[in-house]
Figure 1 (cartoon, rainbow over the protein chains, first blue to last red):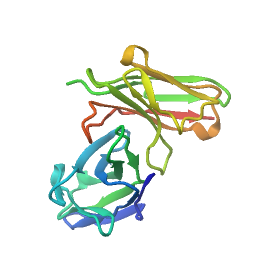
Figure 2 (spheres, rainbow over the protein chains, first blue to last red):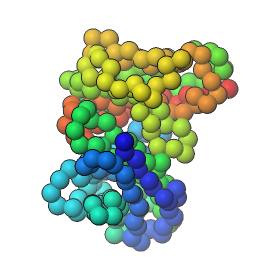
Figure 3 (cartoon, rainbow over the protein chains, first blue to last red):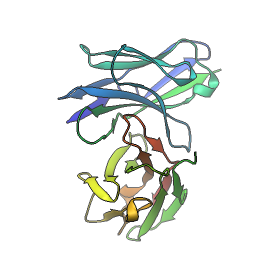
Figure 4 (cartoon, chains in turn brown, purple):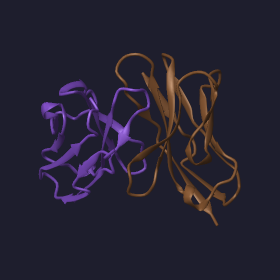
Length: 114
Length: 113
């Protein structure tokens, strides 16, 4: 079994400020980790993914995330946000082995304030 | 490359009525998923197909939900009869099987009144 916890349901941040969206996971096996973004009335788009190797993963739109196995975390960061980053962000996990099946967190709404 | 197509985009029905959603995955994607996303929650997997066979339907409420994927391509998800708590966005996704290779459709927003 696997689960994802996103403790912050909403994160307001001023434009050009840095942001961190927190994600913790639980799994009985090794995992792959993902961040997805969802703009209003749209489907989910993959931002970045951690499969193996370097724990710092860079994604699209200037986002990056760091995998921390000891803390079972995969926090998403961006050094300077734009208005266009306003969206909902979902952390997700897939246990290694078996059929690919992704479990999502409850999401964090990022609101960028001009 | 065309994306995952879903229809309709919006649907409003009364409780106890029936409704069906359609999904056309990306050509060549063997795996197809249906997710339910209730407002304020993350997407929850309802059913997963590998070609035209069901891999996982453990969270599908089988007393009212059904899904099929004929010929391993298009898929339909049906709710009969609908309840108020079925109001949600129903997302279809497809995958080549490569880890993280999900592509999502824009979803169908269902409102049950």
